[in-house]
Length: 504
Image (cartoon, rainbow, N blue to C red; front, side):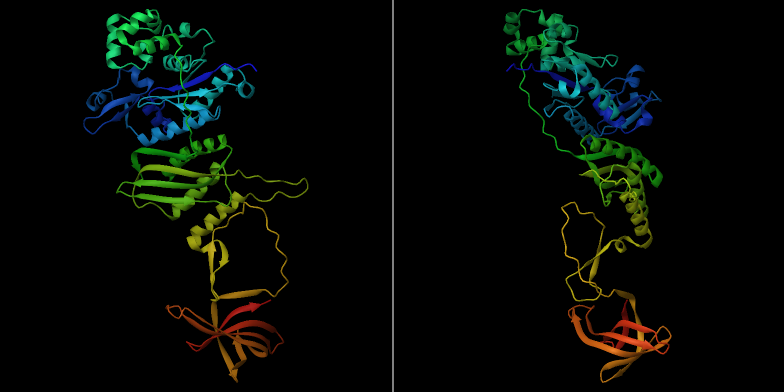
């Protein structure tokens, strides 16, 4: 069996601190932007975009120097947003190969992708690189991609490419030629090594590769051999795959505090776009969304929305979050927004050719959210019986759709329907021989024809809500011939009678 040749694609994104900030701030794309780090007033520029570089901004410039450029937008560096963008790019790379190596540093993102044997899935290597670049740019990140059989050659070339030619494929045997014009800065040089090469007049990898290997090793040791192999594109590499877990999390730190709900929903919409795109790439849907709002006065306001079925419909999620935040607003202005989501199975619906289409379950979620906003959070759901003999012994749970196999339950025999009266209606009852004989209900007098009972119940004698009741099931008839089947209780502690239910 013929052994396949190794092939690696390296994805490189420079000025990553600034790009991670601009990723969720599309309105700043056409403006010069810098990322500042450090404690005020000793802040300095750690990253910047292309427009800022064109007007003369450089790294390590102080806040005072930046203020001389009124058109520049200065943002504080956000490690959280960088971490989220880094995992986002690693997940994107993982969509092309399960073997991805993370080589990111404090200023730039870099990962290597083992693409050996992927031609049948994504076509030629140029087509794979173009598809990868398209996905990365859809995430709001500008990157460059190089492909080679040597990992280090692809890494060095990706770092040396320009934005005009963001993709390049090195054919086997042409590594040294492709790397020759690159500056030595693309290598992992220490300060001493960079100073030594500068004193020798070595500026490009081609000049470094032209040096005699033995003389280079004699002067720089084994580091000289390593640099010489890197310059030729012949340095071997032990690939160390990165094992990433799906984490649907996005965060944005706001430039100024916001209070209006419409402004907050606009920010949440931007984060939802990112989460939905990532979920679709992994063939999952958003099952639950948690919004964490960092408040100006300290503390975090957190709300979680869980629909009946997972969904990737942005409009539905915006409406559900809108209704929930409108009913539970934050207590102060908002400084940062974090949106986390739980992955779930995508919704699958089988439609018949002649059967009418059923309503979308997501519309039911919106309707329930509107009802909760009107009647209260704990007053909407399905009734679940509690382990008690109390007549009101039930609780409300959110509506859920079971995901397991359906359970075959034998049909129950038909029984009369019982309609509870809540609250119970106080009535006047005539008692003979400790049994009800007549009562008034709804401006009519009823005579009891059949009485079943009493059944005595009592409970929670240790609490303030204790009860001690006698239950009667009655069949009564009014003077106009109307028949009434009902349930009465006699509160032995209060000494009064109440109508609690009617039977159909």
